[in-house]
Image 1 (cartoon, helix red, strand yellow):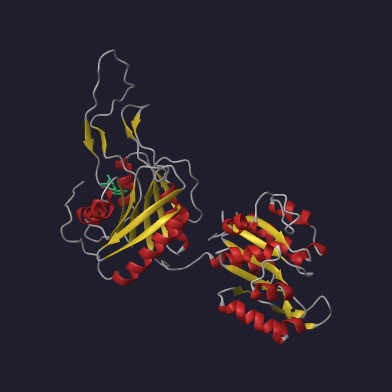
Image 2 (cartoon, protein in one colour):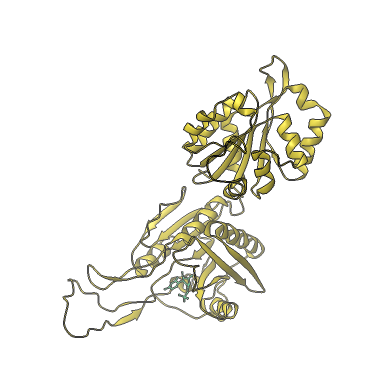
Amino acid sequence: MNLLAEKRILLGVSGGIAAYKSAELVRRLRAAGAMVRVVMTSAATGFVSARTFQALSGEIVRCGWSDDQSGMDHIELARWAERILIAPASADTLARLAQGRADDLLAAICLASRAPLLVAPAMNQAMWRHAATRDNVQRLLERGVQVCGPDTGEQACGDVGPGRMLEPQILQQVLSDSFANGRLAGLKVVVTAGPTREAVDPVRFLGNRSSGKMGYAVARAAREAGASVALVSGPVALEAPTGIQRVMVESAQEMLEAVLARIEGCDIFIATAAVADYRPVAPEPQKIKKQASDWSLQLEPVPDILAMVAALEKRPWCVGFAAETEHLEQNARKKRMHKGVEMIAANQVGGELGFESDNNELLLVWEGGERQLPVADKNLLADQLVEQVADLYADQNTAHEPLENHAKHSA
Ligand code: C5P
């Protein structure tokens, strides 16, 4: 499983001979699909040139306050990063982080960022063993910093002992593991995403503006939480997330069939698709000619995939989405009962959020609880949604009998 694809990694490089190994780390992270930005301390530039990292990362390398030509300040970089790894982390860098200093770019970014911080110490064994370094490492550990290594062995200075930086492939693995939370390990999840297209004739269809971004983010988040994921997707312009089985469909009927074909043994079903509500009763086999007079199209409702899955005898734990224009919570609760599902993720439509946007906000409602997820990137929301589903699923994963009061639906 490649958890590093499209992840935003900020690599801090501080002064030490091990800095040359970080060049290989950048190459490996990029090959795994991660986006990497490198920030060097001024001591680091004495060991490896910024150009090396620039060529490997494909990004401008920042070497300090004054050298920063990128127009991106420390706050922007701090917000951009999903993980910060300092490799090598010198004794001086560890000391400065422990003190919470902000007098160079890298230290300031670490102070300003809420991204998890990982450090890969590299130094002479006596420096590593020194009580001052031990205290600094202890303080960092207490603050939740992940200290990776160091390795023990022969050192560049001829000493033997602890202080060698971990090898690039191990650091890559550590970073990758930091994105896996394993909450859904061993579970099978089916996700629907995107719009459906209901044929009017061979060239025309009824559709909607759904981009599929939310559903794809949910599928990715479930995969990263350890689930095996099938994504049943309507027509969208998105690439399949890594490690996911994707099935492309067009109409609601095809989506229903693709879902039912995968529902056996499914533990959690998350319906994010914006399924058309109606379809033409009789799509024309030939292109309909333009006429001077009015023309009307007779429509019929499409099957409600979510409600049908929720009404199955052996049913998964079900999550539905709801777009509401008013009375968000009240309507979400009604919809949860009506569809017979465990959770509804509701969002207020109108304004800038929703279908085509990268951002959204959600209100999760379930029996006896709710959680507001404030405006955020759909990827972050998907992580939070999956985390909540994992919590509730763990509490309730006894038998999932159809809920009471749900509407009965038939194919
Ligand atoms: O009834 P409404 O369209 O508001 O319900 C939205 C929820 O139901 C979403 O989770 C959507 O994916 C799902 N749905 C479905 N099949 C339909 C209509 C909606 O699975 N035909």
